[in-house]
Image (cartoon, rainbow, N blue to C red):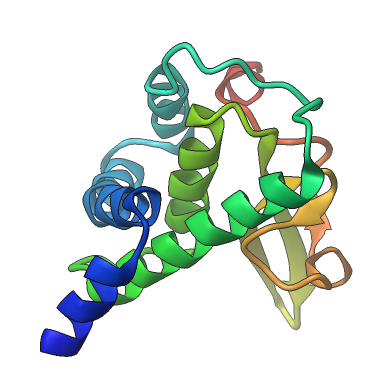
Length: 157
């Protein structure tokens, strides 16, 4: 246990905050998705983004991707250490929310693939058409639904 606390205290303030938010939000998002539906969870998270203004012009791309990778590591660590590990959708929704709060151009993506007689869906986060919390070949493994998924888009019938 001492090793985990030592590692936590060596993190930057932002990384500590991301980890703690992940610990809190992963169970909340996972429960919301089980009790209600995706559309409701997405709309609620969009409201919690506050005054963040999403822009695709974010200055330094290297710094933007480094920040996104750091947040990804913290959400993954929270998933491993927390009481709820979450699935790809809940982890991606939490990461998407963290990045959107910082006005980073993060997009939640959902894709699918056929597996034998079944169907498999997967969620990930993209920035500048690059998977942030998944392998680079995610687009080869899954066919994404058209465009990033938003609560407003899902609400349309």
